[in-house]
Image: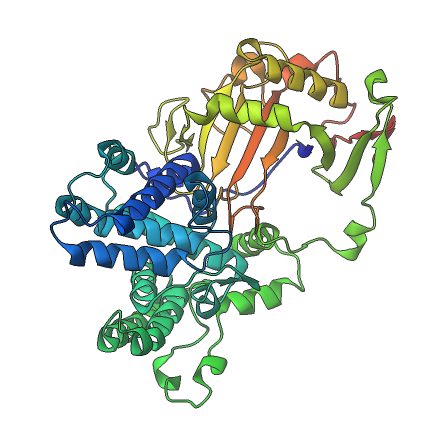
Length: 505
């Protein structure tokens, strides 16, 4: 049994919007599963058959990289069914990166050297899509996002240690070099420098890349960092707190340099502020499951069994937890069953599309949407009138809150979304800030129901370290609530969620 969050009046801040037309297919976990399963099957056949192979060197290199990435991977079993082993691959960011890199850079050459062992197998791997450098870059972006949110050191991550969890797969010098190079392209200077330092150490041991090449790019990254630092008029988490060239030869160089991120976190942990950096750091803290609530705020939080919201709950009360105040956030446990969860997921699985955001750019038409890097999920939509399970789930929502959920203008269609590793949705507004989304007939979005259908093994708040995350949400509209939840007497009044008919203070 899984749970969901009920959030009233959600207000967050929209940060760092990056527009983009490119649909990152590597963000679809179902497609990743199919690729992983097909690749595992392909390699198993290559290992037992040397017929119809023009170049054994190409095949050997492919198999060696495959084995190096997966042989010691946690939960990977070469003798298990391919789909079982594929989940071990697609739940691990290092394994996914190495798979996407092989399919983009090595698979096209492999296919020309091997006459099809199984044409259908090759089609499944190709899947009408040729993976390219931009797909590898998008996978690297997911890794960089994880390191930024959780502040993992690249040296540990490259060894397969994710925040103290050993995952059994590692990166070579060439991989660390590519990640550092991409971080440099994105101007994530602290990450770029640290990844290239790891690449230099590994290059001296595994010979996967010339150490001189890694050292040259590291020098470039340091110089660019120092050059750009002069032009920064504000703190930036992707910079150090001082120029690096003057301290490079210090015996304790790495201990001497300090990330501006660490300075900011130390400062803002002691003050309240409304600046963008303060809100950004607080958002990152929430994403990494660090509490940002004061002792006073925590003292008002509690759990309870709800039995009076509706007669339906008299026999089996709801397990509820008050998580935050103003806006009020309540988590309700064990409210949706496994069968319902799987039903909702299966309904949208074959029709998942890249999630979009409201296009608020100048001149955009009302209701216009666009693909953006601030949101990396894929999603699908379901309505009560087309799906009996959702109708039942929506009726349950009504019994919990007393709000009207079912009706043409009572709520939006249910959105079911899934994220692969490193997936995220930056801070944003659920409320409508532009016209064209039914606000004239249905009113503003006043509440969000968020169901957790499947949680990843590690992470899960916003940037997902391992595994995948499935969520479903309903946005409830304002106008249809007039007879259910009447307005208070004050022009500005916090909505308080009742706890057994007593409003939460």
